[in-house]
Length: 273
View 1 (cartoon, rainbow, N blue to C red):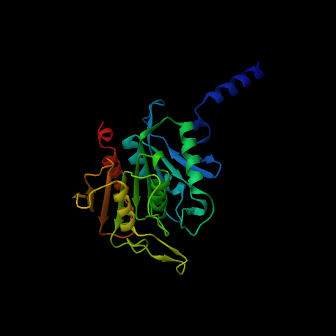
View 2: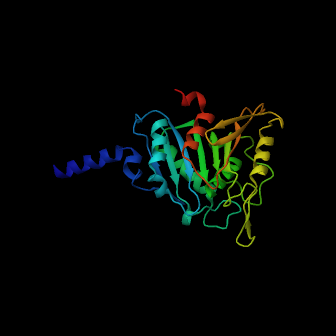
View 3: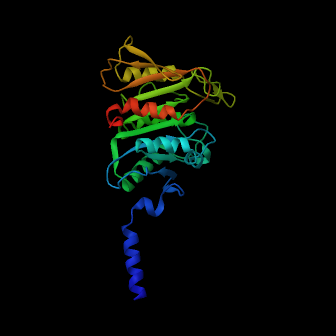
């Protein structure tokens, strides 16, 4: 009888959701090249496709610190979002131009997305990538080389590192850039790192490239304010995508309310449901 019970127990554990077994707010979700952490919205019914946000932490931050932020979890709960925090190897990212060369970040992100798709039903029409500082460099590179995987991008206080691409294989993308005009860590025009061996990219150049990719008329834009943000929204883009450039008077800052702003901007109809 005891042996039969054990067999049944093993069977039913095998039927449990994958995220319940190995993945959650207190554990790592392992993939071949690393791991990520997740927060599943408490109101999810276990069946409906989940809108999702993958957020890349900044230099010397980590996924655990992101998971501990009540403001980020509150944003996810309010919007019913699956929140995903990939972990940078050594708390940094090995994107093109980075001093770090720890792993192939594109392969890592491919693994994370494949694992997410295996564990949860994803709403691919609401699949946002965001990142702060060096994490924003990840955002720009994913928009450029993995654009078809996601439906929107938010880069905060960062962009490509040199050499910046002249064009992107992924073409036009919906993207919002937020940056502080007084940012000394990652200035808008970038700065040299480690005696000039590495160099942060130029935000204006990156935005000009994306504007061209989206075929947005040079003179067609609309200014508006979103709290402390002064934003320029490109209009008349032949791509039909959304492109926006927002500046604030501060420095190297991250405000969780900007996630909500980007979510409402990029997914307006479904955000209002």
